[in-house]
Amino acid sequence: MTFSKPALLRVSPTVYPDGLPAPRNVLAAAAVLLTITMAVLDGTIMNVALPTIAQDQGVSPAHAIWVVTAYQLAIVVSLLPLAALGEAIGFRKVYLSGIAVFGIASGLCAMAPNIEFLTAARVLQGLGGAALMSINGAVMRHIFPQAKLGRAIGWIAMTVSVSAAAGPTISSAILAVASWHWLFLINLPISILAIVIGYFTLPFTDPTRTRFDFISALLNVFAFGGLISALGNVGTESHPALITAQFVIAILAGIALVRRQLSKDRPMLPIDLLRLPVFACSIGSSICGFCAQMIAFVALPFYFHDVLGYSITVTGLLMTPWPLTTAVVAPLAGRLADKYSPIHLTGMGMALFAIGLFSTTFVPADGSYVGMIAALALCGAGFGLFQAPNNRLMLTSAPRDRSGGASGMLSTARLTGQSIGAATAAILIGTSGQFDLTTIMIAASIAAALSALICEGRRHALRTGLIASPAGV
Image 1 (tube, rainbow, N blue to C red):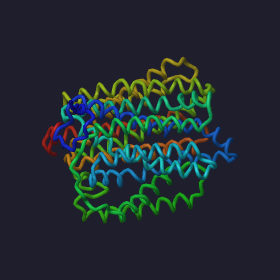
Image 2 (image 1 turned 30 degrees about the vertical axis):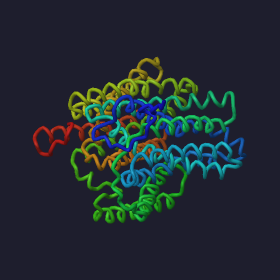
Image 3 (image 1 turned 180 degrees about the horizontal axis):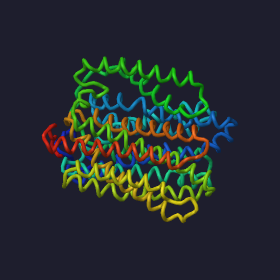
């Protein structure tokens, strides 16, 4: 008697034109969300652990912070190259390789004998994380049919929000009972589980077999690495000459990168997609929205802790309603985007977000927590209503065979907006004689309002026929 393998244990190279069959699609989505959780957590849990690591390694806080910076920079400079590589050789190969690299690097981080080794391992871990973050949207587009893509993107937004909010708590809990090495060791079983599930369920795609452009990848490193480094140094004690040099390198490399991409059929920096009005508006509104978000995320903890004198615990609890409401609203917004036009949802979401940011300026400093909690919950709800529909627009406005470029640009827009927002907050905090929450939150509100205007401009242009409507809008 012979027994056949269950369908889920057979690895079939079949390319499905509009999503995987059930229940394979659910398991594949679980693998993606599991890896996103892992990558996002590793970007947030280190902040709490830095003092412990610095003390254990006998280094200064400024030296230890490179454990975080190295990870973030590795992700930023690798997003677009790895997205292009995914289109060229197949998203499945890049994603599974990313999980493996991330897991191996986590083990190396846990075994690091000194801070230099740990920083190098974090760079490798960032490369693995970039492989996951750069193409998760593209992978989801091949897991689910377009009619259900909005809810899938909503799940990603929910996962990112919950993971970011839970990171400091998880880090504190682990450090309370174990050494910092366990912050990395917990990734090993998660990586193994994700690889096993992903190997049997992640979709196969038709690779373009485009030759990988190493020169463009190097220019991308200097352009985005220089830009993010310069923005990160703005408002700090870094020498102005260093910041200027970083901006100059970023601009020159960016110009060279754009000129090189103009002659490419499938450019690494997706200029072809940026020519699509709906895609370009989605990128612009995303950058402005994440800029507004990061201004508030940087400024509010300082206001709660340093100005109002709240404890670290109370400060963390006051910030929690924002990501929690985003986690609740984003999946619902994704479902709505599948049934109705996501164009309307994005403008409404950003308008609510701007109102929530501005309303924080009316909360009295000596009042109860209720007013601030309500304002931040409105911020989270508005951002959740915007994010999933806008990301759906971004992905579906691009041709299916350019899903990698669209997904990579989605993540790049998020990180660019966050970096601009952090730099703006640093300037506003550092240049004022005293902490001025009103000015800072008005700046955040303006950025959110600009995002809302872009969304409404896009809606008007589509309604009046000024630009063509892509499928699914």
